[in-house]
Length: 367
View 1 (cartoon, rainbow, N blue to C red):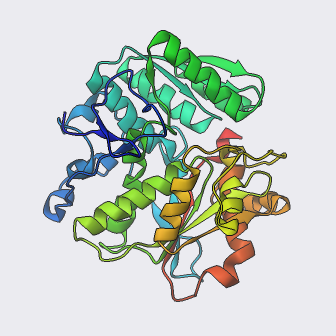
View 2: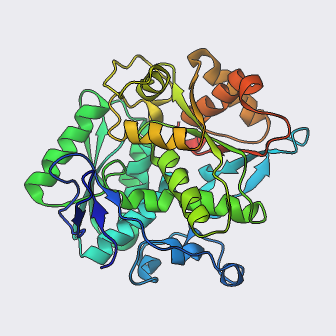
């Protein structure tokens, strides 16, 4: 297998079923050559697997056991009066969120590595996605969730045949319970935080935007950030496009945190390391991550694109959700928080001549 994990000291590791973190720190994927052959792309099905030359598989058909047709979600104008402002409708993915991108690649890798059982932890959307793709691949699946998780998300996870373990306490307590089970049972840890193959799936968000904009990249992208699944995926994806020579720029990443839980925004603006914060109530449960393990990596990515991190006012989330619904987009509160932050900071953030894409990443049917 030519795709390797690499730790913070540059040491390489061969991925296997049990290998999910190094002695210290966290894994990334060692960079590898990617390409985007336009003459082939236009002949392929409209799924994220059309970018097989930029995905980490020795067997480019490895996805066939897990795919649900994910990817190539619509990119549409938010409204006709804003001809340069687009929304990417990732809430139309098979399980209703962008997490399908990462889960599809991660579970395909689990199959490729010979995993028999999978454990994941999630506040909802990632767990739903992992459960669905495990069902597709016929893998035993257990999902650890906070006890406060939305009943609709729990019902969806259970419908896919996964066993649910509710954990009392914080999102961080849930992750610790899952890690303990992984170590004891030697199961494959389908973590959207620790396992970097997940980001190799979410990076297709960037590839699709590039293709949908007639092989151009936007000036700015506005994305929610909790654990950084989409922010880091988009960053990696746009980096891949640049390294392959099909674009010469990176869009500025504008990352959005919740007012009730903003450790990355706090660290970004104070020029400090990300540290654990106390979480207050927030409707944006999907980004309420008090101790993001890749927080400093997220800040580095945002800074490299000359972007910024902003905070969604809690009191504006309901109004933002209603406003989006009035435009035809029915999204969950976490997604509405991204739009709420944009509405608040629009004058300082976006010039009318700039090409901007905002992610609508979770379906309102989940909440």
